[in-house]
Length: 74
Image (cartoon, one colour):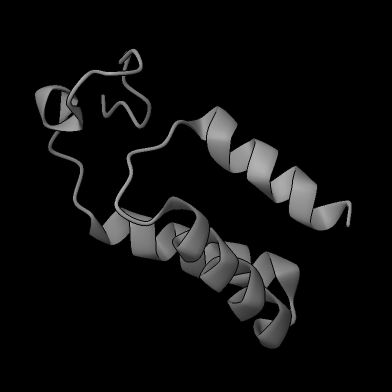
């Protein structure tokens, strides 16, 4: 079974928790999210904001959810 969220703590090098899940699944997930939003322009703005906020970082699911909720509630 493939683990999409591995048990890593803050400060742990992500390379130490890497699994064999192809990165292509990430692009499929982003495409799926864009379909759910329905407005490609709105999604592009959101996605660019995510990239700027988290560039050159490894983040946890909680980080992305907190950011998403802050964007959606403003």
